[in-house]
Each structure stands twice: as C-alpha cells, then as structure tokens.
Amino acid sequence: MDDNQVVTWSVLGVFLVKELWSLFKNSYKENTKALQETTLAITELKVELRHVHEKLAEMPRIKKDLDVAHNLIRDLRGSPQRGAQ
Image (cartoon, rainbow, N blue to C red; front, side, top):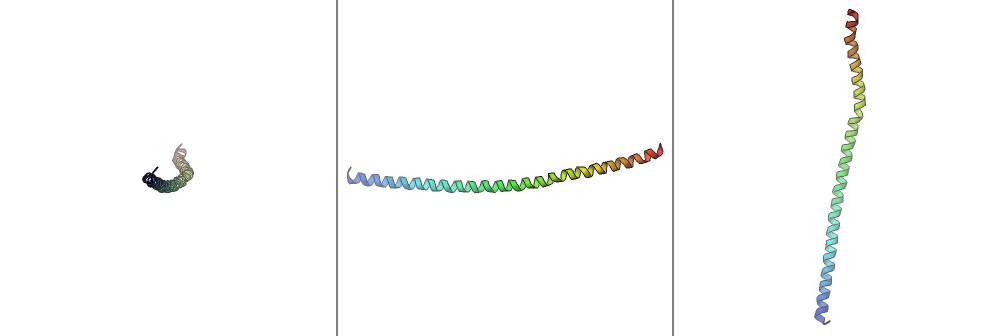
C-alpha cells in the first residue's frame, strides 16, 4: 500500500467510526425520548385508573342507598293499601 491508500483508508475509517457513533448517539436520544413519553403515558394511565377505581368504589354504597330508598318507597306504597284492606 502506498501512502495515498493508507491516508484514504484512514480517513474512511475515521468517517465510518464518526458516523457509527453519531447513529448510536441519535438512536440513544430517540430511545430515551420514546422511553420518557412511554413513562409519561403510563403515569397518566395510572391516574385515570385510580380515578375510575374511586368512582367504581362508590357504586356499592350507591346501590345500598338505592335499595334502602326502594324498600322505603315500597313500604310507603304498601301502607295505604294495607289500611284500605
């Protein structure tokens, strides 16, 4: 190999290493950004699920109150009928 070929291969090698490093660095930045966005989305989902869970936790209490009210209404409707009979 003459000096020109050595210089050419050296420059090509340096350029290749530089490009590979740049590709790795950009890929790392993109992956980090995607990971941050995914983490944010998961956190938002957890908040939404907690909110839904809180709302659903009220349902048994509401059903119990509704059953009590229904029984009271049934008793009120039945009272005059019983007196009339």
